[in-house]
Amino acid sequence: MPICCPFCKSTVVKVDLSAFDLRICPHCLAAFFPSDKTMAFRREVFDKTREIWLSILEARKADWVEYTEGACCIDHNELLIEGKLPDYGIPAHITTCCGMFHLPASVLAQILRRTVLSPTDGMMISRSAKKHNAIVVFFDSLLNLVMGQKGPSEDSIDLIQYNVKFKDILGPRP
Image 1: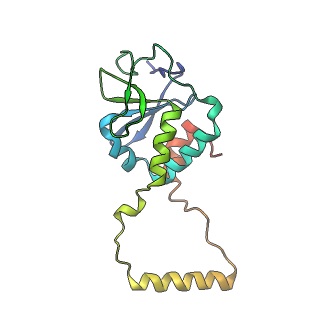
Image 2: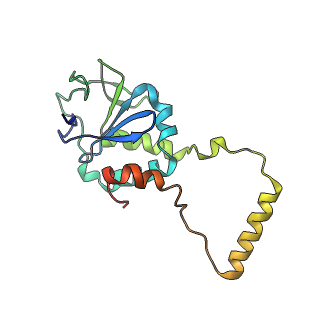
Image 3: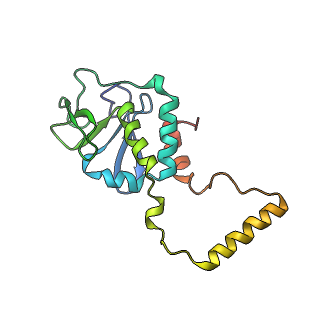
């Protein structure tokens, strides 16, 4: 039996990520994931995907559905109550039966904005640059300047996660 969004009553779609339970409503763009997995959210959803997701949310503001009285937990059908999201401190409606975030698009946009402003890509990169890399980069930029070529503005590898796992749910990029 399909799971329905507590905000708009549309069918929710599960995003196939390895160790992270993420569900998204394609209609109102609400998201649902365990509250004890906030770091997994940053780790499992890549920076470029979060950036595109935020741009889609902002482009589709007309589709946003806010909390309505009587909205219930997506898993346990218990009423949501007013509170603050753990780890974020954002006022929202939270569950009392489990630790599942129920994020309407407006709250999700706040979280995505925070994570886009502090990307995780640089966390795993060594701080000491290798000298031969600087030389290779210099010659590559010099060659591109002489040949009049420009590198691609976006790395296609960064777009793989969005194109494979999120595009069918969220739609094309704005």
